[in-house]
Length: 128
Image 1 (cartoon, rainbow, N blue to C red):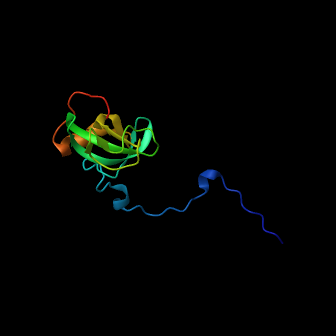
Image 2: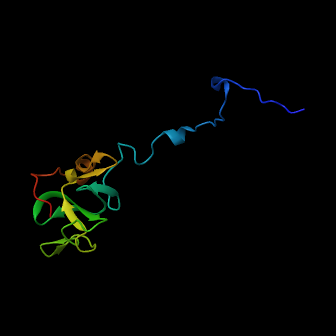
Image 3: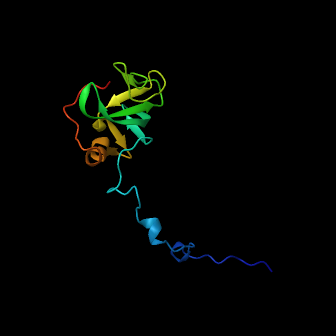
């Protein structure tokens, strides 16, 4: 004799659960308090994806600048501006921009750089 399955309301169906450790919930390095802009990070810049290749001063303007290697040839340089090399990438894949021109995981780059590099952006200048 064949068994007919018992139909249970969806509210009675149990799905297996496993205990969640506190470590998997808590944010370790990378939490908002520790999160900072670093070389090697993937960023969104000028509506393009790119990778941070340089963070620091530039001879052509005061304050902190971020060197970004774009995935596509929509940049303005190869990592050098006015004969000064800041990083190396393929021609037309590089940009030097203010931190506010990039976003990381939806966070404006200016918020991720101020406390760690000692100076906020100075007046906005054209991207190089």
